[in-house]
Amino acid sequence: MHAQPAAQRSSGSARLRIAGLLLALFATPPLAAATQCWRELRFSASNGWFGASSTLRYEAPVPLERAGLAAPRQGEALQPRGTQVGKIHATFTAMSNTGELDTWFDPQTLGALQSRRLSHGKDSRLKTHRFLDNGVWRERLEPAEPARDTEQWAVRSAALIPYPSHADKADPVLAPVMLVARAAELVLSRGKVSDQLVFTDAQLYHVRLATAPTEKIETDFRLAGDGPERRVREARTAQRVSVMPRLLGNAAEKEAFSLLELTGDLAIFIDTESGLPLRIQGTWLQVGTVPANLARAELVPGCAR
Image 1: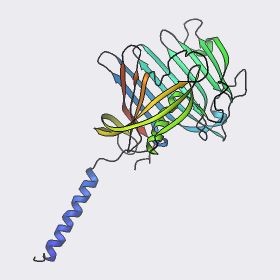
Image 2: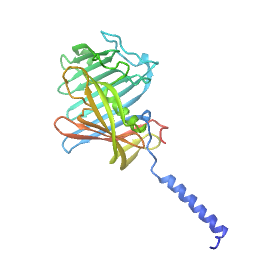
Image 3: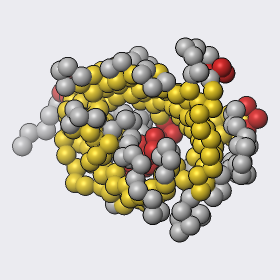
Image 4: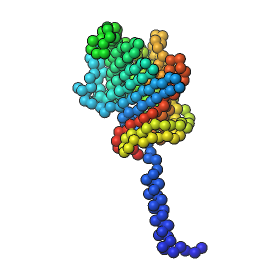
């Protein structure tokens, strides 16, 4: 074997360095990971004639005095362990119905402190849930006459809903919308099962999140964060996380457990690399199984890996 001249070796090394720089320059940048990187997630679903969308906005924690937590007329309201309160703002649009949901939580325990659901459409209403140590104070307001200002709406019902006596009071209680982040954390930690208490509109559930084998999902969404917004259109490896609710207590189920307006066989598909929820799947009314796919993700600047 003949040794290469020094000039040829130098030229070859230069070409390799240039090729490496070009690959680094034009390679698809990786997605950002971890739920604390999420700023906004937008999902959309359509089957040709039916369309719906949901957006989750993860706001930065604010001081307790600025959080806007209500004082219940009965019971002692939960307070955060620290001085900060986190918030998730969700919006929903399905056919002629629209709504928005604010969920306040303790950043330390990740337990829910308050939720406020405003719905517009045939059944306009405003529901406030203030979480207590042993239950939830629930108020429902409806417009006494056509009026957009909720300050003029009348109280239709108000009650203290106690938790079932056998519920584990040591565990923080979540709101359903908080399960999206819990599913991502389960996958990123390579766990198999996660259990939590979740309060819906009027009842407490034990919810088990359980992972299944990974599968490929075709994605097409916009990604914003560091640098220009870009389109992600590729097959990603996702892990299915089944959402399995079990009603606690002896009362009959008043309405089916739901997540982002979906019920039935619920599942969240998490990107195994980034932790982004690529799909939330369930049943919507009589339409059947509906996959709500990630349409846009906005990340906190500086989270890209």
